[in-house]
Image 1 (tube, rainbow, N blue to C red):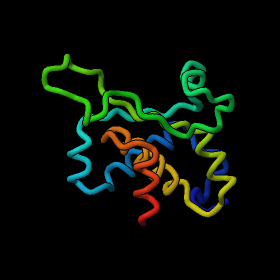
Image 2: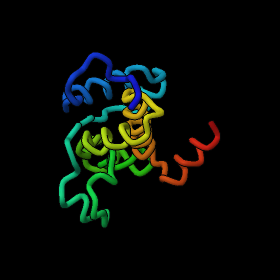
Image 3: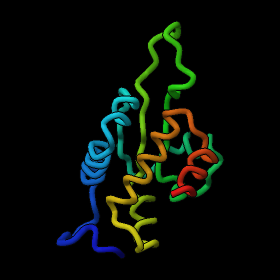
Length: 136
């Protein structure tokens, strides 16, 4: 496991991951943050059973994050006021991936998941996001 959680004798809590997500978002370029607009971040241990069922996932450890809302490309000023867009981060799957990988810090992994889900907020598909990541 990487040394990204030094000096801690316990696993990072929901609040710890929320703080990492807030720091990751704050570290993004200002133009990116402004374009993202109002996005609510929420950290849960796992996705709800209904979410896993809708995504046809049997293993809750397969889902580290999820975007929920109307992406910016599909919004219209004529639409009724949408609920705020939400980015869910799932603590246990993120910690499991972090422990299994050992090649990234926890902050790096949280940042990666957060940016991936914000990509969906911008209307990008998984294929679009993977193509962008492959360019780096």
